[in-house]
Length: 329
Ligand code: FES
Ligand SMILES: [Fe+2]
Image (cartoon, rainbow, N blue to C red; front, side, top):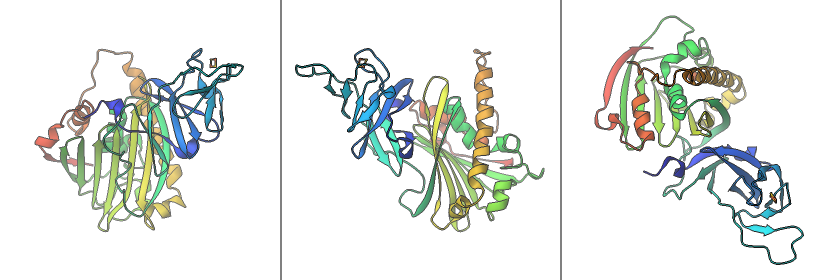
């Protein structure tokens, strides 16, 4: 498996990149994205001349112009013009990153990945997809675990996702895994006691929470009719302290999401995201006061160790030892 930064990472929605250049952080380094013809170009965001941020400049005919002395660079990173210079432009180049565009999402890689990027769990089907963007102070491990962890929903999202009724349901959890992935499948929760499900969902067959290398956390909601709704979140460590996410909310065409889109799902989902951001930020900021304290992995934290292993390029324990247990959800 390749190094984390050499895998594909979803970094932006194409709709976020307009006429102006856009600066993003990619594994701690600034990168400028800009439109060049029909494609998006990605260069390290530093002019080789005085290391000024190119993203502070402008895009002219598909090339980026530095705001300081106006040197220009094309999508391949080559310097094409030095204003005022009569002789030939010297051969100067800014390193570029690999780009790939898929269903409105831009992926970057520092390497040359063998496979095309994975976007979401309903690929190849007739779907309705809504893309969201989020960022918080946290780590990919904590943020992925948060997305996949059912037991925080009664508290962090009380009323919205679960906890509307104090009654809990006995649920079976099956943990399985393989090379680069681990998942928890929950059955026995006929209905999720939260506002979102109550308003919008019928009886539930199963819920799956899955992590995939390099930073994908996805949830699938199944009814007897099949997969009715899914969220696939692409997370990446933009700086040492911050995680950025591009999320796909996906539903079959004509299914729940079509209905949700026209209704309250968007705002309710944003509230849930906001609640998670708050708790993740609190955890990350507070942990900095106790640098030697390791968080406890509780008996219901089914996926954390395996997510950690997968991110380190190792086979998760669940691949060799699938397990089953029961919890009150
Ligand atoms: S710093 Fe960019 S052109 Fe001089
Ligand atoms: Fe949450």
